[in-house]
Length: 49
Image 1 (cartoon, rainbow, N blue to C red):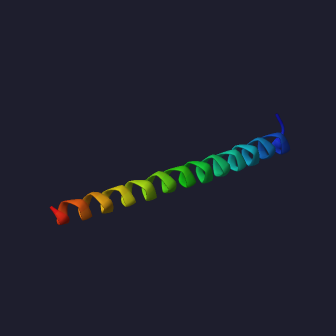
Image 2 (cartoon, rainbow, N blue to C red):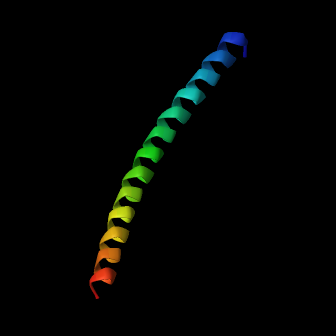
């Protein structure tokens, strides 16, 4: 493979990695938000008792 082939391959890997990272971060962020809200509701229930 020549230089441009390697450069194109590198760019493709970079783009795919960035997209995957963004999707993973968004999913983790959403589940983290849900976890935090659940924890806060549990804390409120504990305080009431």
